[in-house]
Length: 581
Image 1 (cartoon, helix red, strand yellow):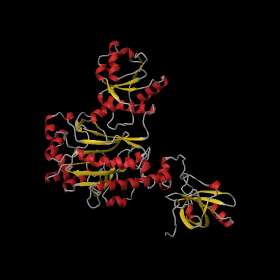
Image 2: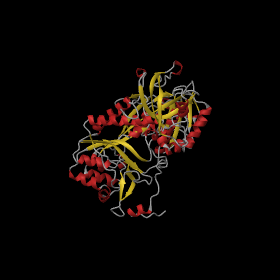
Image 3: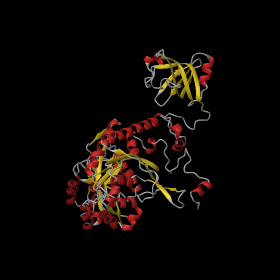
Image 4: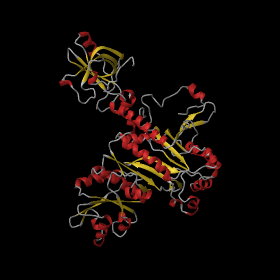
């Protein structure tokens, strides 16, 4: 028995009536009725109502305790009067008649905001006083769920024979797609460690070491701008790697882990299990995104070839995508939707409405020859009452715009099913793409194995080569990326050469991995689902910060701890740094 409590604030029930008990927690509310004072005491687990005796000194003391102070209460459990029963609380049938109440930690400052209410509070205040914000039941429940999910993930991986291994936090700087966080060395003047963007190289080295199946709940550090689904600074992944493994082996290992986690910790349905596989090119054409939200029933149609036979000049010689909705829309809707289209960079947005006699009505009707209208009806499977929107640009921008239009239509027409998780694999990513300067570069992880191996690299055009690269997507959010790794030195050198890297570049930038692969590396593959994103989906949160105990704000600042902050000249001197600002 603890000195401070015999029960938590959520344990006391009718069977405890008549017993002397002790609880401890924060004072959530105080209700002073003159001769009696009622207090709600809250701890991590719930709330219990306590009530003073009629003694004047007890009433006076209890009524002047500052709300959110920490207290200890001892007294006798009794049944509540019928009119005071609170069915919303697990302890709502009982209360404690106070014999003694002691203030353990008195609040001496004004609260910056009301705790544990539905009141809207500025995020900067919430983050500055995060220790108060975390007293909120919703955030506390999110943290408790996080702990349960992490435990469940570990259990599932261990059951499959994966070995949990912790990899270093201080490592070398490596070009992995984002900016590194650098840490100066005191012992080695002018040299720096880096925080790992991911354990990518370490987990591959574990495969070279003979570890068959590895996993960890891995912290990853990237100096990049905040997004709704990623906090700046650090995030966590369920990182895993398997030796002597193919893409199919990875799918078989991780898919049930994701499925069982979402079915266990949410009341929402999980559709389409096993998860469907969608090739990258199909995803970009049909959904305009490699992160498609399959809850949205709308899909994109390619009408590029059709419009080369029409007289509408903005479509001729360009990629044309279309989206059909089974609904006539008001003039006001079209006006507002045109405003949206132009706000994302589109020059306009054509549309047609299909009348009862299957004739067309809309701004581009006159540009479609009469003899071609039935062909359009067949191509787009149009019926009376439908509206079809048209998007035209170069192929890349047409795909992007069409994807955004599809998403916005789904939202505005309330077509997105909210009570379901829809998963899919995106597979067959391109190995290479053109960068902003028209130069060949890696599309994703440079260590992905090209489909077709060395023959593909030698014989195919770079932009036609596919990689064994795959993503898990849920409700339009990318949960993770993974790949079959390129473990063959000859294939690796050729793959990097196509992207403009020399053998010396590889040896310098990826020294340990490149050297290790020369000692007989096994084929291996892996993936790393984002834990924070999974929890954001499971809690139905709009921001990833709602599932992290102490997140940074969107400007990569820890407002509570005052980071980043200045350090003394002595500290800088120890690590051989002079500031030039």
